[in-house]
Image (tube, rainbow, N blue to C red; front, top):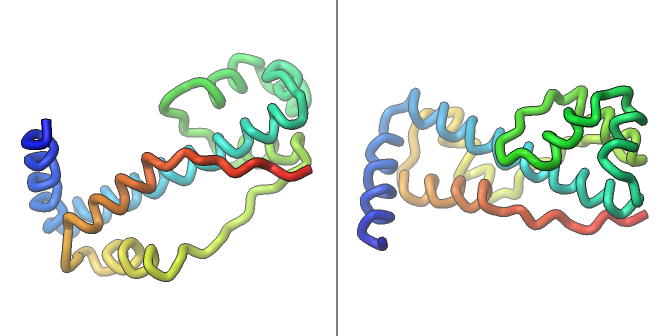
Length: 140
């Protein structure tokens, strides 16, 4: 198993030497991590508010199946508008926050430059961001 994982990381590191692949991989990784975090935090807020998915769907004038998929599907791609509507119904709003300095160095630099000094470090950092699903409790 470790050998397979090592081969994966080695192959990915090699692929990340291609500037176009690197940019697409970084952008997609950040997109996935961002959406996962937002959806997870909104679901925590929904549960904290004591709202069912159907009640939330009614609040934003949406089909219950749409809200169920948002919180249940493994791979969702909601629009920013949908996320903003759900957030508003939960008394929240979607805001931007800057990346920490180390993430800016490891992620933003390679995205803009199309290269990185250490593809394995970049790949592992992006993987860690995608795997992180620890939504913070929402304070009322």
